[in-house]
Length: 252
Image (tube, rainbow, N blue to C red; front, side):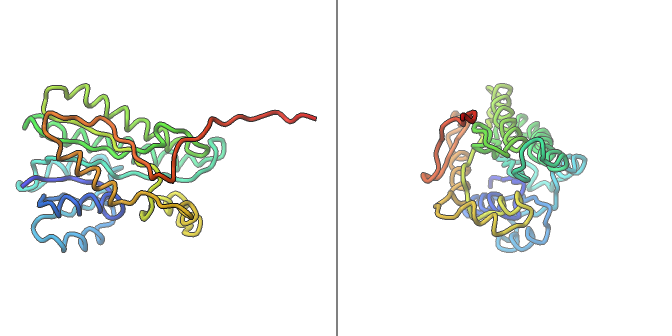
């Protein structure tokens, strides 16, 4: 039986990803800050889910958590670095430095430390997959996206550089970059619990769902061993690219 390790698994993408793999007969190590939600989720899959309370910004705990995994869960076949967040939409000169620091700590430092803790075992076993959840914001800047978009650009380049290092090892990495996706807490977190503002983001659209992302991640994980999927970018077809902005001077 293969083993999945997924961060940010208490809701949204993480929970949907864990559920998809479990339905296919995998074991799952599900990690998140909200342990109560993990316990409820794990009760649905007796003996195949290991719920672990983990904040990926607690770097010391990341290392010990992975080092101390029970034997039956210790050999991780697929790591999904899903834990991440966006905070605010203020322009850079007005944005909160605390928000910036938290996004960097979660989206970059946490992801890197989890990867570094899991990767040596994969290389030693000559097999494994890492899926990093990026965003189309890593490629497409927008007003207010400042540090969030920069962290997701980091995720994409880190993934590519992992593959440069892992050539010939049997281990592969993929960056999944979703666009507009509803039914998660993403916008509620971004707008500090303002549910009406979060709801307005998706008004009149048919966005991607967490299940769409879970399907994509499972497809990546089940490609033949000789296939590496470097990057997948996906959007709902109510979303696409726009023109570059031009600021025109006022004329009299």
